[in-house]
Length: 338
Image (cartoon, rainbow, N blue to C red):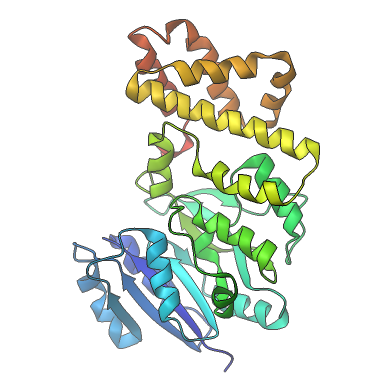
């Protein structure tokens, strides 16, 4: 039969996507499982709509009032978990039928790994396929090297580690703690770093075993569109970088990424507050000859955004400045097409 796994499915005011998620989890080929819908104080009818699935083994737990944030909700579920394995899925993603079975098999074969994640396919609100989410070239798998992941994250920022794809050993939380809810936009990345540097190890199955939904209403999307200061990503990563020395090239790439991040915050600040100081400061940094080469390392969207920022500089302090900034943000945000 195999070891037992508890699968928590997080929900807050879920729409039709929740039922699709629940069906995909109920259809998992791994049989020794307990499936729990954990509702975080929803005010809609999503829980009521899911009750007909209780006859098929779904257990519903309603948090009323809710925890108020995603990672506190994670920690509530972790505290309740009793099985040796634990998964925390999101209520709008779609999970392939063999996902849990393959992850359990991997962890059973690799006792020195605390959790295993998978590749995915990004989908939009209407289930349309967007793009693959996979491990970057140069990073070995299925057992990840901590410094390969660390250096890639320092240089590129965005993580390929998809939080709701993870299957955990329950014991990892007793050894290294729960998710840091005070980091609402990078608590998952911080937890992967903690496993890599404080835990036993992290696994990755380079197979798209789930479909990961992206929408403009997600917390991370709203955060990127609204923040006017540096991302909390840097506050978190600075702590690890202070502890673990990395090559100069990696550190310089990280600092260039920090300036790109501040440029994004500067655009938001001009668009929302009419304040151009941070934007002009960061454009000045990128104009310096010794810093221009870093622009080539950024993605196409970021390079276009910097180019657009340079073009709009003469109008930044005019009434056209905020309008131009809003236009540039819309035109270079890949999520607007979702």
